[in-house]
Image 1 (cartoon, rainbow, N blue to C red):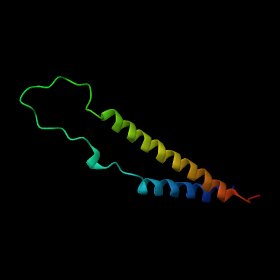
Image 2 (image 1 turned 30 degrees about the vertical axis):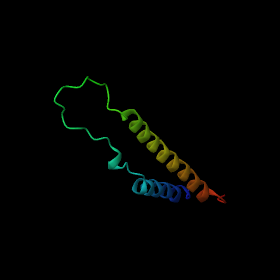
Image 3 (image 1 turned 90 degrees about the vertical axis):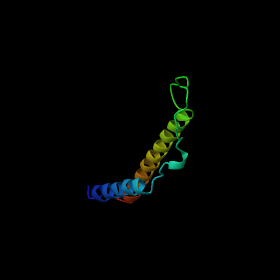
Image 4 (image 1 turned 180 degrees about the horizontal axis):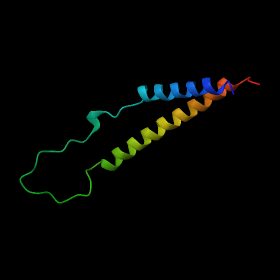
Length: 84
């Protein structure tokens, strides 16, 4: 039971570290809207490339979550290794 507190602290520290150093989306990659044209364009359901951008963001979030989970499990297993 004494190993639970250091393991929990290691896990929390790892999560905070991953949040701090996690990848940030680049502002240059965001599509910019052009100025309003003289004639109204046909209505579109979404901006070109919006689906790909949202999928990339979801992939980044899932990758970060997987890294945090695997690192946390490895950290806890390392702390518990050799404990009676």
